[in-house]
Every structure is written in structure tokens, then in C-alpha cells.
Length: 455
Image (cartoon, rainbow, N blue to C red; front, side, top):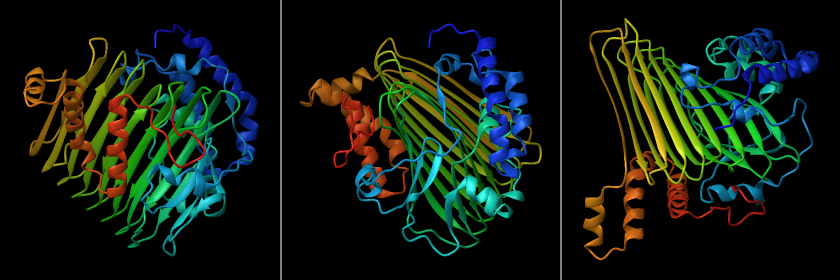
């Protein structure tokens, strides 16, 4: 990411585009999506595209990613894809409720609702915000447009994405799988806004799969808001498997109420530049948040995981484990911030980031942080950056295992601590397979479908 770009010129470029299309954005969107649009863009202009001078983007300069002359998709385009032939190959044995998001737009005709229980809604955010606004009106936006310019830019341009609603005490037995595809004849800028509402006592598992279907340049700026009611349970899995010319800015904001339990898993297997923002707000007593992440980068790929956990209520627990394997000239970053507010007594908060560098040219930056304003808490954080243990490698080779196989075994063991936390067995097996291929340097493909799922 060494390209020098004038920050002011880039901001003017996106300001000019917004001014060209703002009337269309307001005219064709719901009052809910329009409510913060003007304020959001003003905040984007004030902050600009993040560079390393922005403390929260200290290790990731996004400016070069915004340079291409992108096509913006502000209206729904006709797209056709056979879901049964193209996408089930991702996790062959996993029976899911499938939905398709294409270049940031939800496609009803390509959605397979499967066996969703009565009352559960899986639909277009654009449609729901117009037809069922009551489902969104009582929930204030979890994504603050004043804190992150990428969230502000998303809010300014947002038109569509997926909406998932699980009513009170409903258990969705089969996971909801969102296939998030990028494909166009031109370099494309995609904006996607998603909302997941899980009411009191409800349970759901969501799998979001990010793919690119050709080799054009893509920039995807996505925001997902998740609200977990009292005693709700949510598992949110993200599988990022895009090519080297794709930039994925993925921001997830989660609001947890009393006795809720939310688990997130983020697996970054391919991508040119990946920035994952994850913010948890534990706003009810006895809430639990569990965050797992792993990334496997090579060439000049870059991954940056930025997490924030706000313990705003007593008797809550959070746990984070993030692991990275970096090869060749790849770079990685992890910034983890835990904030325990004054009245959040009896908090348990743990954070760990472990990183394995396979070459002398791979680099990793890690910054765990604790902000504790309460006095009766248990909190810890730690980070390691290192290379393969030569003594352990010698131990395996002394038992007749060749060096390549020994290294592969050690890398798999390093990653397995995160993989084993995946509750969906078919997904866990598939991730194991993809991780193994990734560590061997193989380009993984969907073997039984018409499209190449990553490049």
C-alpha cells in the first residue's frame, strides 16, 4: 500500500459524486434510510478517507483503494444465477436457508427460504424499510456516523442489503446463509447495509460468504447491525474468500441485552485488502460476547481486524481469540479495545492475538488495549508475534516427518484453536479443508459449480 494519493482530491471526487446522485438517493429510499444520509455525508467530508494519521486506521491506509474510477450501483440491476448449481458447493453438507446479495442488492427471486419458521423474515432492507418500517423505527442506529468515516460513507450511500427478523422465542433450526457476490464488467464500488433483529428468547445462526466472480477491482463498504434481545442467542459467521484486487471494508455493530449470547467467527482466506471493524455493546446484565477470528494472507495481501467491546452493564463476559498466518510480503494488524464503564462491576473480559510469520518480509502490528473504569473486574489481554518453533519442527522431523509436512502440521495446529470453536460441523469441516488448501498454497475452488469462487 505504498501509493501516494492526495487525500483532498479523493474527498472532492466522492463529494462530487454524492452531489450528483443525492436527489436520486433521497427520492427512491425510505424515510428511515434517508434520516441520517445528509448528516452522515457531512461527517465523511469532515473526516475524509482514513489514512494512517487516523488513530483507528493507524495500520491501514485506505486511500489507494479509493483511487480507481469505480462504477457505483445505486439502482437494482437484472442479475440471474442458479442458486442450486452455483453456491451450495461452498459448504456441501450444510442445509441452509439461502439468500443472494449481488453487488450490495438483495435478490428476492434468487432466495431459497427453505424451512424458515412462521414469522421469520429474510428480505431486502430496502423493501422492509418501506413496507414494514415499524420493525426498524424503534431501534436507534447502532453504527455511529461520527466515529468512523467508512460508516458515514456507507450511511450516505446505503440503499439495500439483507434484513433478517426472528420474532420472540422463535428458534431457527437451519442456518441462514447469505451469499454476498461481487461481479460486474467494470471496476465497481459496492455499498451494502444489513440489519439483523433477534427478539427476546430467539435463536439463529447466520453465515455470510463473501466472493468475487471475476478479476475486476472491487471496493465493498458494508455495515451490518445486529440487535440481540433479552436471552437471545446469535451465531454470526463470516467467510471472506475474494481475490487480490478486492478491498473489503466490513463493519459489524452488535447491541446485546440482558442474558443474551452472541458469537462471531471471521475467517479471512483471500482478499487484497480486508478491514474488519467489530463493535460489541453489552448493554444488559449477564450478556456474553465471544469473538473468534483467523486470517491467512500471502503475496502483498493485507488484513486488519479492529475490535471494540464496551461493557456497559454488570456481570457480563467477553472473550476474544484472533490468529493470523502471514506469508511472503503480506501484512496484518490487530487492534483490540475493551472498555469497562464505571458501573459494569463483576466483568470478565479476555483478549488474545497470536500471529505466525512464515517469512522475514511478512509483518504484523498488534495493539491490545484495556480501559477499565470499574474496580471489581477480571480483565486480561495478550499478543504474540513469532515464527515457527524450530525446536518443535526438529522434534517432528526426528520422527520421520519431512520438513514441509511438519510445517503444515504445525500451522494447522496453530489455526485449529479457532476452527474448533465453529459450532456448525459441516462448516467447521469445510473451513478445515479450505485452511489446509490455503496453507499448502493451493488456490481453492468450488469443485462442483460453474463459477470460480475465488481467484
